[in-house]
Image 1 (cartoon, rainbow, N blue to C red):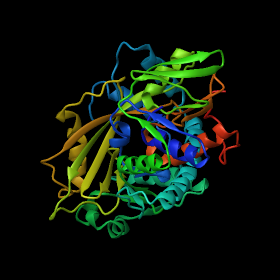
Image 2: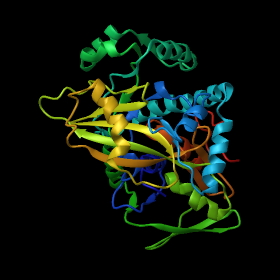
Image 3: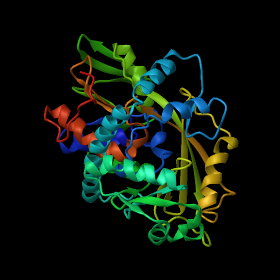
Image 4: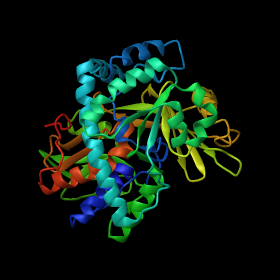
Length: 409
């Protein structure tokens, strides 16, 4: 269920295991929602938990300021308040450390799985694998980040602090503005690419291997007899199988609730703008994050993707040009000629977040329904590893990486 990057990578791994696979998707092609709009960063080196000691103050300030990276938009939705309280309970230094290490372990495992999948299939994705830069605009934030990076370095991540001169050598596009920055963290093993392009290419590979894709097919219900799912109801008929995988992103908790399963997943809205890159422009050579504004950027062929904001606002995908003003100003400050700012393609997406930031795998109340949902802002990074884990669980194998804190049972 679902043909985003999570669903399609899972289909590929299940096909490799010898299963007959059918993928049901409400859109007319794969990767039409969050997978088409994300930051494009493949970033184990930035797998810090969003729930941190700094988060509550940012959410509070967002009630009267629109320049906060985390924003809370109050609404009459009990799920929003319940999820937000769970998120706040994770905002301690110790919980942030534990959640970060869990995310990081999964992200590193998934990056290796991604590299293997690309080598096996040859799928193109406008990839860039020369690392990422995490930029800091003042010395205090830079020093704090250098201290914090010990969490990921202790988990085996290759990270190094660089001064503004070394930063500009790594990415010459930053040379004209290097005096605005205090320094950067360079992760040479991180990368970037277009998740939508990758997912479409992988879906084509899956189809060649025999997978059936039911595009334009909306799931309307799910049937169960005791602890067994017996069918998925769609607007084009009933689909049956021996095993089912729910990879519906933010729609997963809505469908699971019909089975009496409460998934602690809630949509966190993000904003994305894509600019054309043409002759005469000076885009960044590699992707990164402006940490002072929490604005991510990535070159995707002849496009520059800029993303920002985590808005607690329910299932609302609406947006207006003013929503992008702060992130575009930050990007333009760093890359004034990075792309054609007069032709922005504005989008919004919903990230399926758990309070801890790690996804949910495996079984719930039914013995043949497997969950692969809740990857949040790291879905592109986590996808291939999550797919391998799900295929292992369906086969009854022990996954290669621990799943503590990532299961319902």
